[in-house]
Image 1 (spheres, rainbow, N blue to C red):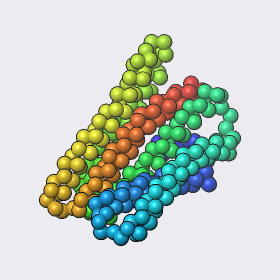
Image 2: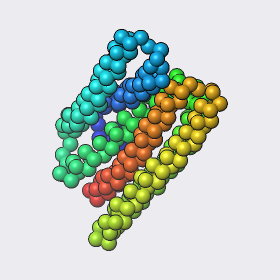
Image 3: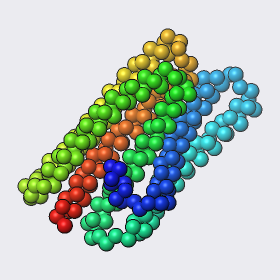
Length: 253
C-alpha cells in the first residue's frame, strides 16, 4: 500500500495535503468523542449545574456538534479536489479505464489513511479517560489488525488469481462474493473484539473502577472504533481488487 501511495501521488505538497486531511478526520473523531463526553456529563450531572450555566452548556454543545459536522463535510469534499490536483500534477498518460482504477485506488488509500488516523486518535482519547482500559484496548486491536491484515494479504493473492483467469470464466458472484466475504469477515472479527472490550468495560463499571460518564463515552467510542475497523476492512478489500487490476494491466503492457 505504501508503494501504491508513492505511485499514485507525486512528492511534495500533494502528499502533505492528503496527510493533513487524514489528521482532520482524526480530529473530527476526537471531537465526536468530546461531544459524547460533554453530553454524558450534562445528562448525568444536570442537577449540579446552575440553570444559566446549563443553558450556555447546552448551546455550546449544539454549536460544537454543528462545527464537527461541517468539518467532516469539508474534509470529505475537499479530498476530491486534492486528488484531482494530484493526478493533474503527475502528468501521466493513461486510458479512461486506468484513470478510473487509479481514482478507485486513491479513494480507498485515502479512506484507509483517514481511518488509521481516526483509530490512533480514539486510542489516545481512551488513554486520557482510563489508561488501563486503553492498554487492554490496544492489545485487542493488535489481535484484530493482525487477523484483518492476513485476510487482506490473502485477498491480494486471490484477486490477482481471478484477474489472471479468463474474465468470461469467472462468474460475477465469485468475483464480488470473494471480496465481500473477506471484507465482512474482517468486520465480524472487529465486532468480536468490541464485545470483549465491552465485557471488560462492564466489569470495570460494576466494580466502580470507572465513572458512569466515562463508561458511557468509552462504550460509544468502542462502537465508533468498531465502525472504523469495519469500514477499514471493506476499504482494504476494495483496494485489493483495484490494485490487482492495475498490476494486471502493467504486466500486460
